[in-house]
Image: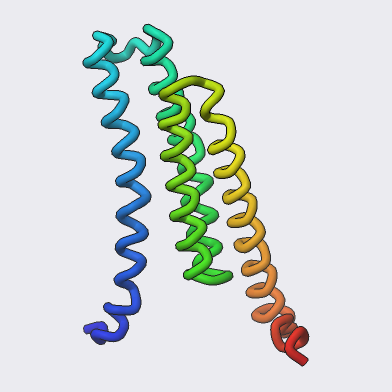
Length: 150
């Protein structure tokens, strides 16, 4: 039976893990609402420009979702959970701004998509640094952090 300390230690992960699919579910629900509003039944994906922008925003967010989740977990496991969580929240907020911007007009999506891409690059850097440190310390016996502190 895990101790209470172990259970409390992982409570923040539950909150973060819930926010990620909730944001995707919100985008899915927006597409369902747009389908009903514009009278577009599945599997059709074309219609008025307003519907197509909402649909594309949801699809684009879904395409980036696996990349985001993989980088988020790797950065959290191998670099720093707090930084990964903060970057994850920034990413989710930027994707929300992207969705709302794309919904309004296609040009309003650009700033949020550039920002969210920047967040993905920072997550990639954190994950890479964490993985390099892990492999160097566990398989080569070289602890880079101790060398930098000395």
